Length: 368
Ligand SMILES: [Ca+2]
Image (cartoon, rainbow, N blue to C red; front, side, top):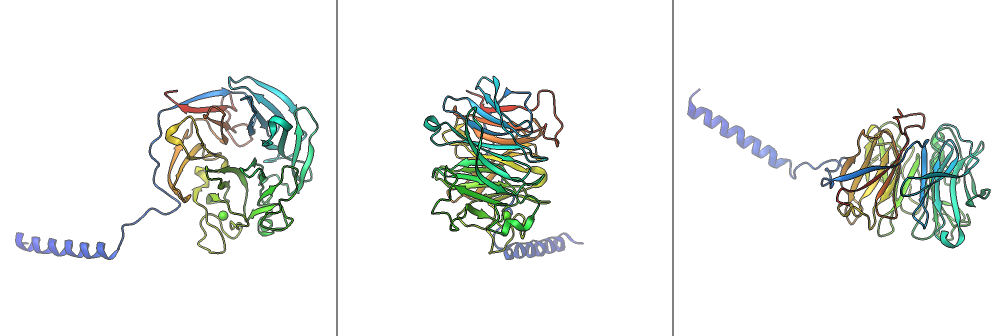
């Protein structure tokens, strides 16, 4: 082949390639479920606040800076000081098997004056929310949430509106998630006394959103918008932006469904890289580079996800933190000093506990 002929053929090939590329229109964009990597994190200081815990689950900070923490299987309510001293406050009667037990805890927004603690726990008959003061016998606040050995939900948190939000699971009965007359597979919203707020989306019904499989993470951004994490079945875990009365698709849809009847997650993870439990936004935190970011604790994924969001709540970047370093992670919460506390869950029957497990980790800037 002559040199000239080679040049002609090469030119034709390039022309064809140019036309083919132009015909594709805009360049390919990443799928919504795999946003780009977030800007790298600052140098982190990770320290162990406390060790020797057993399947810690819920965490709430007292006004004096100490933390209340629940252990799922022992039913212990522990008090943890910022320096890591751990003391048992009381035991709560819970009788769940498997994923059930003593789960989420929350403090009354008026805790300094009323001293009220809320807890989500499993009994032989149901999952329920109870209320009590330290050292007192818990009284039922909301009962009849379906219970099973799996999918019990369990995270509770007060929203900026002063209402108590409760993440539940489908308790192995998938269809219940679409039934607004069942408390399973929902996010519930009740008044601090357990009553139904008059502005709930369904009259006289604690259901706030539905079509959830198993919600174990609830957190609000700086504008007061609620986000929730949810375990998928085989393929896709979800982070959802929660609106009143919204249907999030389970069991018709897992992950992104492309079905206008259901609200889509803001991001999805493979179940192997997440299995997301607790979640927290960082507000006025101790790590300026992470301000406003959303953190999600992964059990099976054995990592802490960091998500960046734009002003519309769309996920613009993701980063895996602590991946494979501390095993399964159950929960993440912002401490009063602005650092992040992370609970491991290696003694929950599904992990490989290391010496010292379970632990509370503290994440802060290296410079501090
Ligand atoms: Ca969904």
